[in-house]
Length: 607
Image (cartoon, rainbow, N blue to C red; front, top):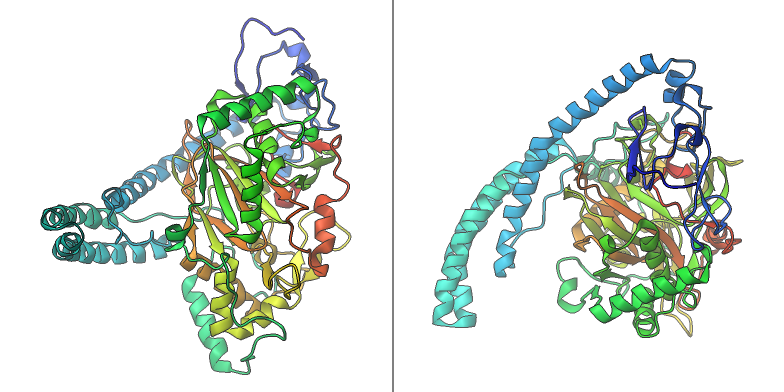
């Protein structure tokens, strides 16, 4: 179809949803079914064909069929069906006003939080290493507590630094260091106290999912006080195991045991690409596009990086046998189209881990092997009633793992405020629990009833969250953790199914314990636009701070689930069924790389 004279990069539908990525506006007669020629390197979202990409626009609003895509919400269908657009437009205007009011209420919190954080970390710019970690806030009550603590700590730290820093810096740098330390101390009073006076933010926005009958008092948002009370109560009751399960180590050692406050002293996890490497990546994009293959054919051979390849293989070894994570920095996102950024992301990743995992089994209502997903707030375009995963909200994501060996995230854009990416060492957390609460190692290594959010014959599976690998001739002793909190307590529109047995008090305590120890020992990777973050998903678990977007700046990540057959850890027997779902039967021809955000079946009430 020929491109008409007027063009745009997006269009707004009558419901207020914006369809990004449109490179033209077709005539109305063509909107029902149109095809865009994207060249020989394009891909159909359904069948992997490289001739064209189908854009499913549908009939006029009031004549649409239900379930156009797997992200449409039943409640809106009920409102739309049979209604004249004149009346539905009033509903849209009411919803729009609601979004405007909700956004306006967030503005003072967002500005205050951003200002507080900027002032809080300003002393690090002049090498002040005494700045405290950012405060954990899970709601308004904890925000008030954090604000009081922050003010007191800020006042104490500022006054202390004014007296201590001149002495400390003078010892290192001599007479002139005394004056340098004096100025640094003065800066601490100026920045730390007002910064910490302003510390307040709310990190959970989505309404709490209702608990099924018999479920302990626990929700997706961890509550520190409830955790402490539950732990004290269970310890008082007694009869808890005092030794570790047979075979489990008292302590793990190695590079995978690290703490957020000190890991940067010995490990630089950021690999910054230089101009020569970036040019090599651009040449690889041109080479792949010239092959005329669908995106599922992206491999180390079809995306050649002759000079960078050895470094990427070294980083894969670091992922599996070193510290378990790294960040590739410097990709020029704005210089490329969305499709080219996907090619770059999958192409680089193919040198690190050759296998791409299946993240969804359908797309646009049809069977598909979806290997790329988008992590983005979709509450502005989707009714909250359909979203059952924090990945599609601005909420804080608590500590968890994804599925499979490796989880990777590519930042196309960061948020206007918040959204820090946090990583924690499973091994460091294991060592803490093993030394202080061996009974919880029993709990984590026993069978749990884990909900299956996608449609299945059985809505839950039984498996342990923690697995032990004994040492062999070729590999050291290891433990691996795989879990997501929402699979046991629900989130948003997907509460825990009442037909699934409730979790126990011991399991509730275990979930809180690994989360709060993750917070204690985590590192912030300073995720920036153009970064690709790779995580050993068996040895590292991760979280995300709540964040705020603006119309101009919306946090948008791409995600791949990967596996490197050369370096991969053995798959525990209890987890093999899940690995088969991820990696078996995924062919180049069947792989789908959606270029626009959508809600995966596992996070969608309308699945």
